[in-house]
Image 1 (tube, rainbow, N blue to C red):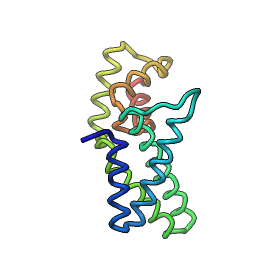
Image 2 (tube, one colour):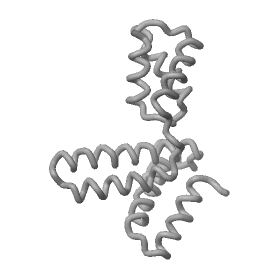
Image 3 (cartoon, helix red, strand yellow):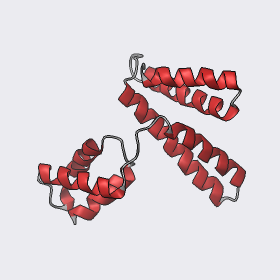
Image 4 (cartoon, rainbow, N blue to C red):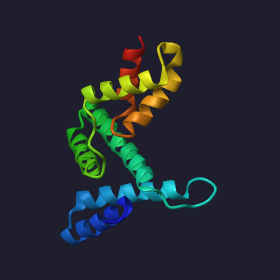
Amino acid sequence: MGTLKDRLNEDLRTAMKGRDELTLSTLRMALAAVRNAEVSGDTARSLSDDEVTAVLTKEAKKRREAATAFAGAGRDDSAAKERAEGDILERYLPKQLSDEEIAGLVKDALAAGGFTGKAQMGPAMKAAQAAVAGRAEGGRVAAEVRKQLG
């Protein structure tokens, strides 16, 4: 199979042929976000699969936050649409780690770096994020790092 971006484009064509409006609009939005990331900065460039995954992760997070906001405002139909879009984006993201897996990876990263106190939160987070490698939201990782540092 090709790159993640190729897979998105192929699934977009499939959604067009199948007249799947929700998938079609979601993939168009995702590909637009990828294109925006490609042209941001000084020169246009092609994104690696990891960078495309990072863009899709941000988009999925936006959908979760919007669904929560809509649900809180009593707009259940809009919240359901945002959740459905988030579910479509999740198909292209790596499986998220469980809390136990995050705790183990953070523990190993903190031990390897010799981080022991809250004063070292920044470098400890950098090491933990590298260990998790995009398989968990930053907020979940930060909470675990804070818990383990003291």
